[in-house]
Image (cartoon, rainbow, N blue to C red; front, side, top):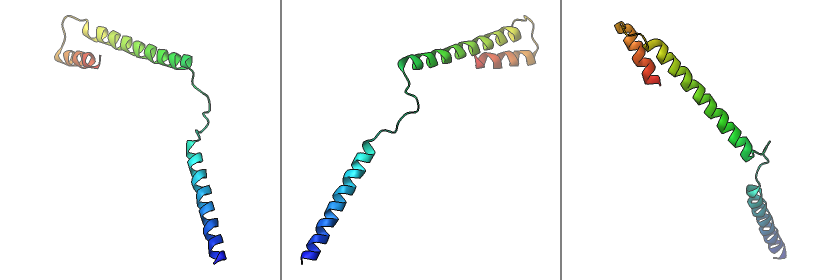
Length: 87
């Protein structure tokens, strides 16, 4: 009888230790390689905005180059429409 009580107690202690270890292990946040600061985020956003503005300017110049002629063939008109839709 004492052996079964000891084994049961040991099993409960092991289960409690396992549950506590599992609960504490999930709370741990994995270390980040490099924490991102607000300034870094602002710089990244500004770089994305500049890239988008440069891309838009490139599309605008492409539109002006293709669509500035007063007389166009049907093929040129279609190209002009395609470029305009991409803007």
